Length: 428
Image (cartoon, rainbow, N blue to C red; front, side, top):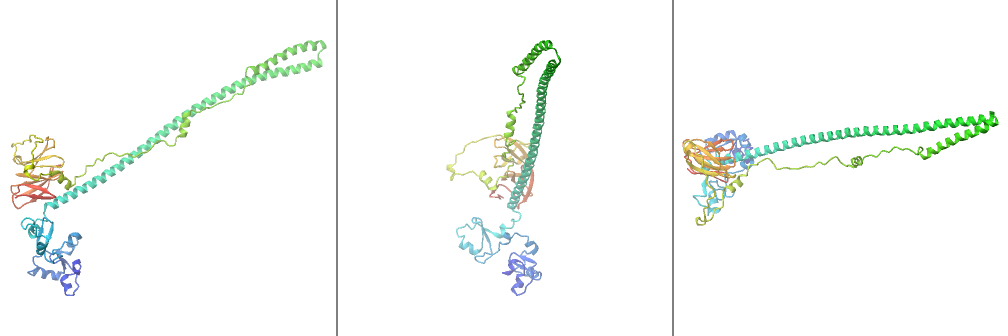
């Protein structure tokens, strides 16, 4: 049907008239224009149909909008719901596909079960679970953001440490360089003084030799023979002294070559052979985030394996402890065990929940509304409590912040309650 898209009025389209739909009727599964909506509302067969505006209809998720009122196999309107197979059933479906289903227990009238669908605790639980998942995601994103900030701070800190170490090394090497430069200059100055003194000493003897040469030449030219004879003896003695001096220069190592040596510390070579200052590595630590436990896994933890017959059950006392009393004594009317092992008791005498840990140690007491009767676990942080005093309702409580999340009104008194696969089942 073309009008199933909701773009055009199905009634007008059947009459070969194209008219935009302003409303949507889920019962008729077609769009309706403004004019036809008036007739639709006045007609006996359709006056009880709940129509919605096209703007509101377009807000419905496509997967939900695709749920039809009629069985596609038999073209009959759905009338019953099979809880065993979790399927909608038309009259023909019952006779063909659900013959073995219990008419009283498994097949439920749709008109009755959908009355409370909008206010069902299932939606409350699903919304709470989605909220918890979103909170988990927000916490994860924030945790990763903080981790990035920590990494940034670590990187900046390490860069600072590297620069400081480099500066210390430079300062230390500059100091060592200054010291060895001073030592080098001192050594040079020492040997220069030593050589200069030696040269001065030799130069003094050179003057003596020059003087002897001049005296000998003058004696030969101008002195008498007698003077020349005795003078020669004197000159010979002086020359022997100078020869002894020259010989002594060789013998006392005065003419040895002097060199400066600079031997660098081997540790300096080790620095030059270094290929890197240090190593950068990435390490991991356990996560600090505690994720919300999956609802179905929690349910599996809460529900122990039961023997097939009562004769196979053997009772064993695991633990016993005293429950904390209130001002009015204590009146336990219900209890539940959380996935973590915490035990929550309903103390009707004091209108409160009493919480003990898995070792039986008292944790805290949470005040609740008047006349609580029973309690069941929804998840690790949330429980549902029944009340059998007017006004009748089920109280959803967050045991972490000790606040009431929601109150679900019921038509009668509430007694026992349990959570089965995300659905709250209670006894009236």
